[in-house]
Amino acid sequence: MGKTAPNYDSPTSIKAFLEREGLWVTKRFGQNFLIDRSVRGRIVDALAVEPGMRVWEIGPGIGAMTALILEKRAHLTVFEIDHGFVRTLESLYNSCGDFSVVSGDMLKTWHAQTERPDRIFGNLPYNAAFAIIADLLEQNCVPERMVFTLQKEAARRMVARPGTKDYSSFSVLCASVCDVRILFDIGASSFWPQPRVTSSVVQLVPATSPVPAELRKGFSDFVRAAFALRRKTLRNSLRGWLNGNLAAIDETARDAILLETLLGLGHRAEIRAEALSPGELFALYRELLARASASC
Ligand code: SAM
Image (cartoon, rainbow, N blue to C red; front, side, top):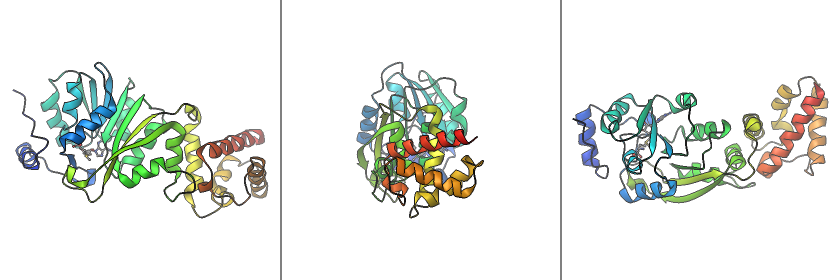
């Protein structure tokens, strides 16, 4: 006979369940369970899952959200790093419709999936949230809708505008691929164990004119280089990138090309990455790529 899930709203029930299963909460994996039923419901509503859709859940834990998605009669694949949780999820949900568990670090396992999902969601481990979202966007695994719960500060960075303190290479990548919206915040008391921070739920839908998939990884690396020395001008911060991409040209000529390109696009010579919009950074990247291929 299958196991019975805990009452996901009750820390006492979850603690007793973990103990019975010989499991424990691991800080390293950012394990905080969402114990607020109404918040779980709002996330499911935001995902707009329809029967038969292929859904990926990242970091299901012991299944608080999993159960709700299976109720929607979706084909659900969950990615969980904690082997103990994997065992438990299998025994709780293997008999509930179309359900499969991929064991291990999601960043290493999702690429092997042969079918792309219609929805992706997850209450993401705080330390891996950026890497997971960036990888999905860079590798063009961008379904019609994604809904992620992450640290409020991280959510702010996703939607930050040029010239603000939260604007970063991650903001540029997100805006270059998706329209991102913060849906609502979740207080720490909605989780067990309680995190020290407030969380936010963000929704990502594909942008109408995203950076083309084949240029995305290269553009993302370029933007990271541009923001790496945040207080420096682009002519300083892009030195290393130019080195690697315009290697056939000597350093003085490389700087002259960058300067010429910046001025040609209507920017000041001493401009910093944080002043440029995602579209302006992409135009600069494309222009420099064209110069790089002309110099080969
Ligand atoms: N979804 C559950 C909930 O809301 O109650 C648990 C969310 S908990 C914040 C994050 C989950 O992600 C944990 O179960 C953790 O083990 C898992 N996790 C952490 N890093 C992971 C990774 N790299 N790949 C897959 N799962 C990961």
